[in-house]
Amino acid sequence: MEIVYSLIAASAAMVGALIILTFHKWSERNSFLIINFAAGIMLTLAFAHLIPEGFELNSNTMFYVLIGFLFMFFLQFIVLFHPCHDHECHTHTHVASIVGLSLHSIIDGLMIAVGFEANAELGILTTLAILLHKLPDGITISGILLHKGTSKRKIFLFSLLTALFTPLGTILGLCLFKGMSLHMVGAFLGITAGSFIFLSASDLIPETHKSKDKITSLMLFAGVFVVLAAERIIGH
Image 1 (spheres, rainbow, N blue to C red):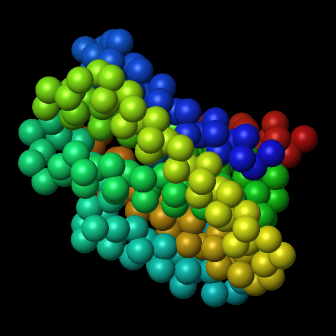
Image 2 (tube, helix red, strand yellow):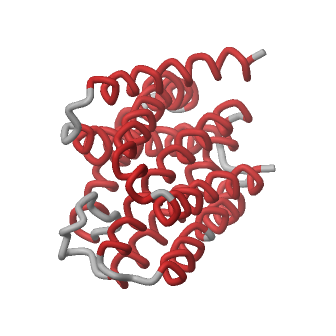
């Protein structure tokens, strides 16, 4: 079941690519709405679910939150694992983007595996957060490649290649985390929370500052509401 949810999350990147290839102008105008919505979901999941769940299993959860945050910082700014949201970017080459996003997709898959290792509800919510994060990712990277003159066929194949690494990460996680002690599950929940906080605060929310539309800001609160509502629905 975890692999099925992972495939669903991975498909969001493909949907993002198809949106940019089919509705280029529309997606450019509305991508900020999706980005802020994803940020609200990730922040709520981190603070309302991952960290409390982690504390129940490991009293040092906040230390692992810091580890997760610093780990993502290292990947983002040292290894350049994630593309910037700028069509004029000259830092991220095609090869760097493929390698970086593939690594990012593996980490996404690992996060899904960690969520399900804790419980099914947390696994589903984690999948939702990653799905909504990968959708603007697909739009962004496809938009950059299209802007640089890359053919639509190559963009589609690139998106498919990087998306497939998400279920690969989940399979890897299921092998690594199977039979793992509850103490270690708590540690990995903290690392996942730190990763979500970093992605929201450093990668997603700053992008929305480029939009002057007030609805964009409200989408963050919509993301918060969706997680809380989903919690009640799934919990029952």
